[in-house]
Amino acid sequence: MTRKRVTMKDIADKLNLSINAVSLALNDKTGVGEETKRLILNTAEEMGYLDQSVKYMQNYSNKNICVLLKNRFFRDFRFYGRVLLGIEEEAKKAGYDVFFSSFETEDIPTCVESRKVAGIIAVGKIGDSFLQRLKEYGVPIVLADYNSLEETVDCLMSDNKLGSYKMASYLYKKGFRKIGYVGDLSYSPSTRERFYGYQEAIQNCFGLSMINESIEYIQKYSILTEIEDMVIHQNKENLYTKFMEIPEKPDALICSNDELAILLMKVLQEHGYMVPEDVAIAGFDDIEPAKMVTPSLTTVHVKRKLMGQNVTKRLLYRIANPKAPIEKVIMGVDIVERGSTVK
Image (cartoon, rainbow, N blue to C red):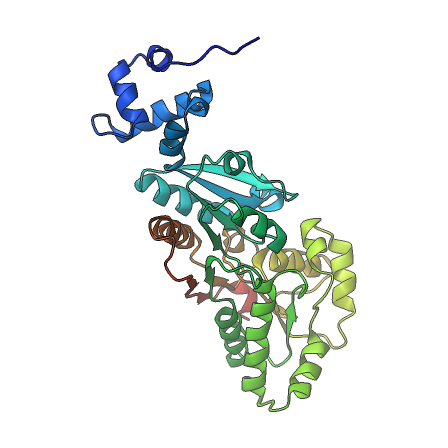
């Protein structure tokens, strides 16, 4: 059966508006408010009107942004929630709607495949092969909190290396001398960057001029593999086993993120360790639960909402200036001292 063609009158009747108002909105003309225009465009999309016309589809897509985020992070907003809030606020300020799309596999989102968006923001880790496929659609892409070493795209990140450098230096100044790093170096570039900052601080603080000296020091106090799955699945037993395998017990540990730091702190406390008396724990990101655990978590503060706002501004600039040079923007970070490192 042939589907009935949707008309402007159908849209107008559904919204109790004039046909003239619908026409102005669909043709991106002045005469209707932004909220009314978005309502008309969204209704036209839902009713299938836009699929009937390339011109109207273009007007519609010019006001939409797709935000991609891995399923795991979409379900757990502790870190990326404020990034997404910043994206949405900045997009709406500029007159754009946001389509949020979570992914586990590398399936292209429907809104991208049907070319209903003007740009894409990928938040967090994304595979290079997926990124390459997205680029084939010719839609501007900006990365938030991730930097691809294979694909050339704009990105905006926190200063991971400086943050962990500052944290290791802070712990050294507090009198700690057995400072380890806990993080899965195979997981993401961010985890490795945070490790490199820690490593450089250890070299400088202890005057280790030879690379083998710093490696020997780090291996004595650190956990550098097989951690991420334990965090994802909240596997306390395996995490404690991993901690017990550290060759020499540290007096302070810098974790690659707050989620790991909070889990590790709970595990150690359940096995009779005092934090920070037996071992100090520090994190990275400053998610909301970092303030709520006991003791509260010393961490590196990442300006998450500002990151969302700035990555959106960068995408809008990229949309308006498709041939402008690619930029990789690094945002500053700060140490937040709390009870987990203060004896």
